Amino acid sequence: MVVASEKFNLKAYLAEKQALVEAGLDRCITVTYPETVSESMRYSLLAGGKRLRPILCLATAEMLGGTVESAMPTACALEMVHTMSLIHDDLPSMDNDDFRRGKPTNHKVYGEAVAILAGDGLLSYAFEYVAAQTKGVPTDRILKVVIQLGQAFHKLVCGQVVDLMSEGKSDMTPETLTYIHNHKTSALLEVSVLSGAILAGATDADQSKLLKYSKNIGLAFQIVDDILDITATTEELGKSAGKDLTAEKLTYPKLWGLDESRRQADKLVAEAKDIVSIYGEKSAPLMAIADYITARKN
Amino acid sequence: MVVASEKFNLKAYLAEKQALVEAGLDRCITVTYPETVSESMRYSLLAGGKRLRPILCLATAEMLGGTVESAMPTACALEMVHTMSLIHDDLPSMDNDDFRRGKPTNHKVYGEAVAILAGDGLLSYAFEYVAAQTKGVPTDRILKVVIQLGQAFHKLVCGQVVDLMSEGKSDMTPETLTYIHNHKTSALLEVSVLSGAILAGATDADQSKLLKYSKNIGLAFQIVDDILDITATTEELGKSAGKDLTAEKLTYPKLWGLDESRRQADKLVAEAKDIVSIYGEKSAPLMAIADYITARKN
Image (cartoon, rainbow over all chains, first blue to last red; front, side, top):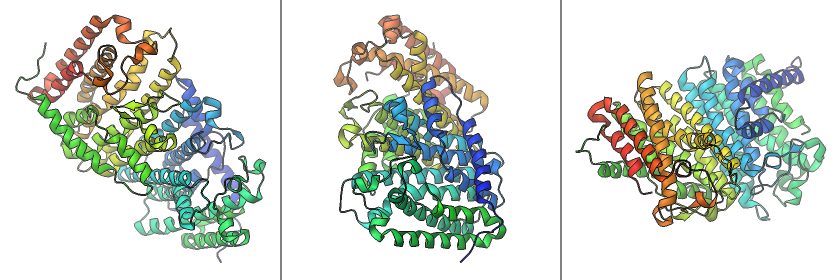
């Protein structure tokens, strides 16, 4: 088993990168007329969160010799896409959620119409921001990121549709469960890693390896999410806990049991770390982030 | 006053280009699992319509020496953005419309959740499609189109928000009316022309001229829309007629009267034709399209 460098301080690393991402996100959107929609976009975009997707993008870019500066617009765009998917998923006609990250959901504050439009605005702005703000990177790589981001979002949409179709059905197959997670959760984590790699000029071989790394942590992430839904409190999660149980949703703990779910998540993370270990010392952040996926409490 | 070449057959031109656009749009989206969302996207994208935005893009590109092939992905993307804005505008929490282009609106057929997601999917796909499918054009121009499309969509969102905020208010100022039209209608017509110009390698001077052309036809288009809302029947429009009167909305006919509104639209179109007349014979399509804006019956 590969162990992350003991010298590497993940907590300090995440804190440093989170601060950079928060500052980057804060610069993205200025409040202009009509204020309600830019405020609504900022409300959800700056509501905290782990910023896992932007950090994965920055960490991968840096591991392959890229810079934080050149990857930051894409990092921010990933968070915009993630945020808009949460805003729309929370809508009354979708998951009908009142709280997100411990705060009232966007439509609870700004109303449904503005929440839909703020989500639309964030989605479109994500593409514009990558195209307009990425500096010092060949244009063909920037176009590739735009394409990858579009493909990932398409998967998000498909995942959400299948999730909605499966609601309340007690006969969900394990294949459907995997489909939903691959599309709804993993796809954006994958493109977070891949886009960082593309911006840094990764070879096809590098991209394949990193795709495998990201698929593993994507699935591990979802298994842990399912575990936390059972074991954590609403306060710890900042969103309603136990929702999956109430909704009679198929989850990995239901499929495998809690212990086996944890074992599977640990195995996926170990494999992911093994993959990036070939990058030596520089892989310390991606190794530690993989560990963090299973160790996290929310 | 500049007159369009008498030899130019606009009807045949529009029919030819419409057929190309319809075929292009039909190729864009294939029905894959989960079928409901791709079917929902196709339902609205292939629901007919004038295809004015794609045709403006193709016509401008060709006028400046570009090809239909290289502009077609952008032309389709413009229609995707236009279509998704209609799907979301029609939602119960927005304009709450039951009919569009003579057919039940998207959410009436597929439900609200899928309609929102289909709109999201079309928006994201528009950017992806431009980036992935545009061939034979330098990548920096493709990136510029992505940026322009993003900026135009941002205006659409702002226009819709101000439109919603103004609803039922009898004290709308002419400035607000102009803001809504500039953002909700003109912005996408402008980028339709500009993106065609950019793809064909237009100079900054060309782009400025064509921006003025597009702003004029954009405003004329909206004035004519307001006139038709009063003078045309629901059958002719394919959507509810007289809506503005019922909604006590400020419109150009209310502001200026019907005759003066027509005069203003004609003047804007004459100016627009004057601008593109410098491109000689090749400007025939853009000249005729400008005329069509005021002559149309729906």
